[in-house]
Image (cartoon, rainbow, N blue to C red; front, side):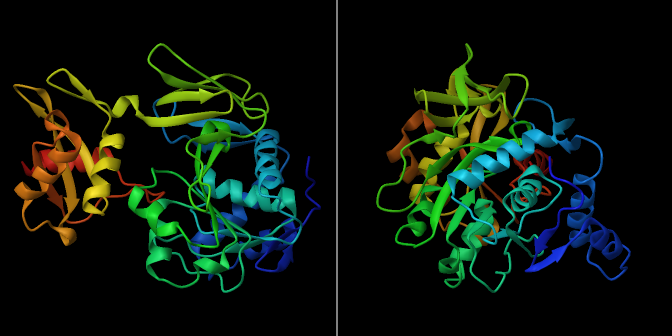
Length: 356
């Protein structure tokens, strides 16, 4: 186990635990930076675990204990896969409150990397020097791409927390940056599978990291066995198709499935199809319906309002068929997002029900 006498390199400077404890006393230190220092100080204390709020991938969100040894094992898997070497740069632009942010710090500690930190924002500010490895959510990656500058300074990038749309994937082709979609959760200390989504030979499916085994239950939801990361098998609510012992295809969340007149529809799959038509972020959500039980509606942001919703639905119908076409198009001023910058699907439904 790492010792409290170890130092961590942050923005090219080395800090001990005592240095960070002293820095935490600085009243002018931004809260986001204090949170990072506080996590590092806690990482080197005498406890063998951290407390972390889950995202809900395996049920109702709750606070759990994550073994530091499991987090180290996860970090080492990532370091090995991406062949990261001491003094390579790892950019932290995600909130430290979530496992994705914490694991970037742990990777830096375990791999003796130079941790570059910037304020976690939807449009992150590039650190001003080459980046060997970074983790982002799709929103951040889209913003970086739209700036048309700086992405080439990043050597390897993982993107997770939400599905990567086909439109975004297309914009990544031709880039020198190696970009991978991730699959994972809090309980597995971040990702357990990766999928290269750009380059001359992108992966068709998620590829498991070494030491991970998977199966499915009777509902076709993924079960994960990862002894180094979790003592127990993890039963998720993610619908998958297992391709081989080392790969799978993610279909969507079982608890998001819409039952409209007896037809069961995965909104994530439908959103991917519609995104290819409209080339913008969208959501498919259910609203209560006396006849169908649930009816599907398409939700877009106002700032990208379609000129003719009826014409849009016709185009969608031609691609997905009658039974998978949303009944209506609704608009919100802006998609609500949670603290980790993911679209809050439940809040969208709540807003629609209030405004109907």
